[in-house]
Length: 91
Image (cartoon, helix red, strand yellow):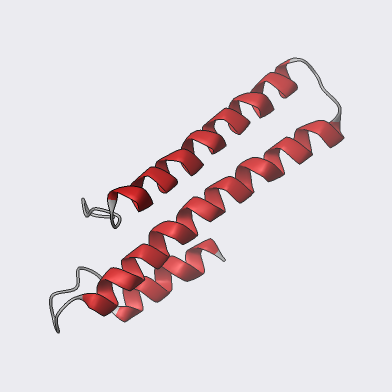
């Protein structure tokens, strides 16, 4: 998000962990496709990747929303319309 930090170090750690989990799950999807695994297995693993990415995205947006609400008037990096657009892009 334009170089901003995503909350405190604990929140950053959570976001990075969710993204690492998604990367691991995506590697499993690629391996399943290359090994010609069943359609069911591939789709289940792909669903897990999608959910992990969604959770990371929602955490990033919710952190930005919290920072926006806590910022002094006019100092927030993102305005309400931009935050809404980001949120809806994940829905």
